[in-house]
Structures are given as C-alpha cells and as structure tokens.
Length: 483
Image (cartoon, one colour):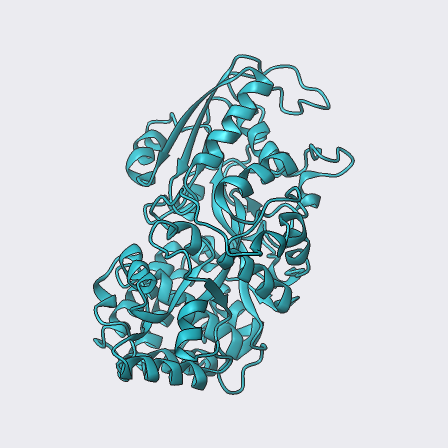
C-alpha cells in the first residue's frame, strides 16, 4: 500500500546481523496455519487456461508453459515502499535464462498508466497491482481481465519438481487473491498489520509497549501532556485507521466477528457488540485529543515522517512501513511493531495479529505473452527469486523457508518476525477489501468522518452496515463466502 520509493538501506544496529537469518525468519512465520482463511466459492470470471499468447513454444518438464526463446515480456511494478530494484533483478535473471527481452515500468500511477491499456485490449504481461492508485481486483475480475492462476499454482515447483508450487507457500496466503472461488491475484509479500513505535523513543520516555487499551491510552495521555501526539494516522488515506478499527473488532469478537463482515452479515456492524466496542475505543482517542495534531489532513508519508520525527508515539500501518520510510527514519530510531492492544473481554489474545499476504501480482487474461508471464510468476515462487526479493526489499515472501541464510533484517522487520512467532495460530485477515472494493471505500469514508469528529460512533456503525447491505444486494456477492 505504501506509495513512496524507499530504496536506500540504513545501517543495522550492532549485533543485529546475527539476530536472525532470513531462512530462519521464514521458518518462524510459517507456523500459523491460517486455515480459517480458506474461502468456499464457485463461478465468476473467465475460465482462462493459459494456453493463449503469441510467444508459445514447446512445453517440457522444465518449461511447463512453453516459453519461447527471444520473446518479449512487459512487466509493470508498483514502485512503492519496496521500490522496484527487486523486479529489475528478477527480469535480468529471467532474460538471462530464457533469452527474453523484458520491458520494465516502475510507477505509482497504476490506474493512470494501465486502465487505458486494459480498455484497449493490450495490457502488460504481468503487473504488481498495488498502491493508492491500484485498479481494484474485483472490478478487473468482473470485467474478465484476470487470468486464473491455477495453472501456475499447480505447476511443478522449481526447487522441488515433486511438489506443486502451491504446496511450497505459507498456508492461507493465497486467500486474499480469491475472486469467485478462483485465485486471480498472487499476493507475494508476507505482511502483518498493527501498531508501530520507536524503541529508542519509548526507552527515553520510560514507556513500555502496551498490552491493554487502557495502557495504550495512558501512554497517549502522557504524550499529550508533553506536547506529543499519542496516535498518528494517515488521514488522507483512512485505509490505515481501519487497520486499527478492524483489528479491534476481530480481537474483541473473534473470528466470527471478522467472518460476519466478509460474509456481509446483516448484523456485521449494527447489532455487533464487538464492532461497537472497537469503534468506541477508537473514538475515545479522538475525543480526548490524543491524535497527533494535523494528522487528519496528512498523506500517509507526511504522517509517517512526523512520527519518525518523534511527534507521535504510535502509528498504524502494515509491515511495508520500514521500507517506505528508510530515507526519513533516524538510524537509531529502532522501529518496532506490536499487535493492537487488548480491549476488555477480547476473544483473541493480545498476541493475535492480522497477518497474511499483500502486494497483489496479476497476469492479465489478454497478456501478449502468457507463457512467459506464467513462467515469470512460477520463478517468483522459487527460493532464488525469494532471496533476490529479500536482498532488495527487506521483506518476507509467501514462500516457506524461501530465503537463503545470511540475509539480515532491519529492526522493524525483525520485530514483525518475533510478533508472528508469538501469535502462532492466532492470526486473522479480512477478505472484504478485495471482494468488495466499493464497500471498503465506504467504510474508509465513514472512518474519515469519525476521526474528524464529524460523526459519532453510532453513525459510523450505521454507515458501515449500509455499505455491507449494499454489497449483499449484488448477485455476484453470493460467489464469495468463507466458512
């Protein structure tokens, strides 16, 4: 989601190189099964077999899609928090192996650059469809623009041809790419969402990472008394404050509260005690003046940069934050991730976190070179390319044990690994943002009004429920369901 390039590396703290090796990190986070993320659905979209494409060659065990030597490959990557150096490294490796010529585009203007190409029937071959200007996946799917990725996922793994590609991935990480029961987007990066703080700042202030909401509010109160914001949020993009709201709902009401929202339950918000408790908790931060001054009017990077300048104690975000803020983060900042603090009566423990996969890669159904696009995606799910990504982007991928030893982690990413290990099976992830983008935007808009004190919690619940009810009236919604 982040939308600034952050490609410079910052120095690691003393001894941090030996804290953990990337292969071990992936071993740690492969613990959560996330089995409850699986969704049951059928139908929808085009049934694309992947046999089309101008550059079809002979297939073999090592070339299952028939990549043609000397073909062209058109790659478009969202150049956000992870930069695009990793994609350039991938393309160089692919071209060297297959004799192809890759055309690379790194941009934040995904919709602006690609919508005309989709409309004109000449889309790229593979796209990282992410960022604030993402083309919504449900819209692309309904228009028949996305290739069913089953052929890629059922192909032999490059590292172990006896296994299918899908069997080499962290369980549950394919679920966010589901539309109508088909995986049409590959969310490549293992992501966690929650609260962030500076280890250095907290040590100076004598604060400890709060485990309860009351302790969180106490730190916010102390910060305010010193002229510091308690909570910063990316006001112009209320996606981020919804991280806090939705985390609180899931932890308060358990997986049933989460699934009620994804399944468009008539009591997902209005009539949900968990939703009421969560939104009341967030509004208390607003009402008591604990928000960082001006945060409602700032972009994500503006808020995050002020947080880096110690103008707020906490900020909500996903695990791309550290990469996105490399240039703005002081070298001794000691960025830390933590789960959302617990409300009284939570059904999930403090350690529970929203975890899953982010950064959706898609193959357009009308890609000019489908064989190469599919082989490119299969290669993304190899240990070699997973390691390339780790080296360039300082992030975990969805490939189990997919990164070679010796790749070290920065403090923030290291703390997400520790949080994932502590969470164990207590992870959750919402699917409605990808299934129902209009509903997602409506809830974000309600949150924007709430944070600005233009509406009260009861009105937020009413607006959120109205968004759910509207989505439920769409016949296509019946094709998405999670058990």
